[in-house]
Length: 238
Image (tube, rainbow, N blue to C red; front, top):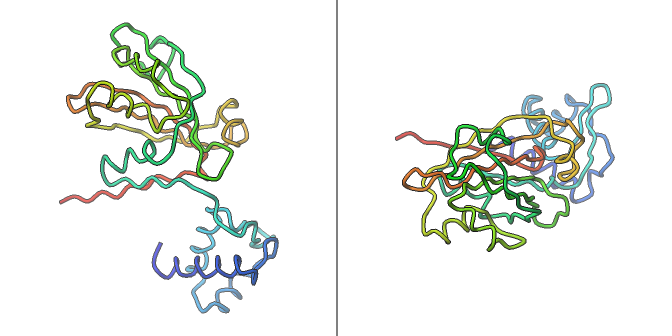
């Protein structure tokens, strides 16, 4: 978003939050509103798109643009420029644990092709919630190979992340993260937890974390409410 687009977004938000524009009210037609604000229609559309994305506006064909909230939805923004930022989810939000169990690799598709000394993995389930909210925005399953499964006995009800416990207990550090993101239909059990309808669009991120020697530490499978999570990548090549 350019500076002009951002200024327009902020100006509209200020009018909504001050009460000059009220929740439930409809905004003027694009052409009229753009002229009133002294901006192009393309600039206004971009600002509307941003405000719709964060849950302030709702646009419908033939129904116009309606103000539906006086502030943006809470959202976790993971901006990735390096390993530290990539691990920010496990640093800036807590994982509320809901249970642990032992699974075999052939029972979980995400474990196929990865080795655990005994063929078994420790599965750790939990959710992450944004500050000030009750409904989790994320459902996570972490799979730990047998060599680190002893952490099960020291896990607390809430932990920043599983890999942090492994780092501390085994005196190692994450040296590489490989992850992939995919749009999926949200499974019914997860949808209920994170506040989506079953089969609604959701974002799934699967990540493999390795130590500095290239040894696998964990595999995590996280499903996110896409309206409350943003992944931004900014990579510079020197």
